[in-house]
Image (tube, rainbow, N blue to C red; front, side, top):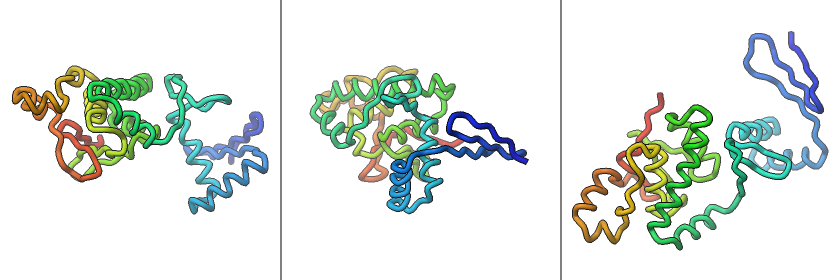
Length: 213
C-alpha cells in the first residue's frame, strides 16, 4: 500500500518497504516539450532526463534568480575553453594562486557536508561543476583532463584538493624557471609533486591516487 501527500503542485508517493520515492509534479506544456526534445536528442526517456536534473540538487542549490553552491556561493556558467584561455594568460604564480583557491572552494563544500576526507565525493563535485570528468585508471591514479587548465594551475589545484593543505601550500618555487635553474628545487618538486605520464590527454601525479573504500 502506498501513501500520498500533496504539497503544492507535487504528489509524493512512497511504497512500503522501499527506499525509492515517486514524485509527480505538474509542469507547463513548454517545459514538457523542452524535456521531451532533450530526451529525444540524448536518447533518454523523459523520466531519466528529469531524474538527472533532480540529482543535481546533491551538488547545487537552484534559486529563482541564481545557481548557488552548497555553501551558498553564487555561481556562473561559462565555457570551459574560455576559462582555460583566461588562466593560460596568467603567469605561473597566479595560476598557482587560483588553482589553490579553487581547490579550497571544493574542500570547503566537502567539509560542510562532513566529507572532507572523501576524495570520491570531491571528484564528484569537480565533475558536476564541469571542471573535469571523474577518471581513475587501473592503477588508482586520478587522471585530470588537460582541458581543465594549464599545468601549474592543475598541479596546485590537485595538491590542495587532495592534501587539504595539511602538507603545506603548493610551493611557489615550483615554477618552471626555478625548477630549470635549481637542482635543489627540481629534486624537491619531483619528490613532492612528481608528475607522471599515464595518458597524453591527462595530468597525473604520484601523490594523486584514489582507492574506493
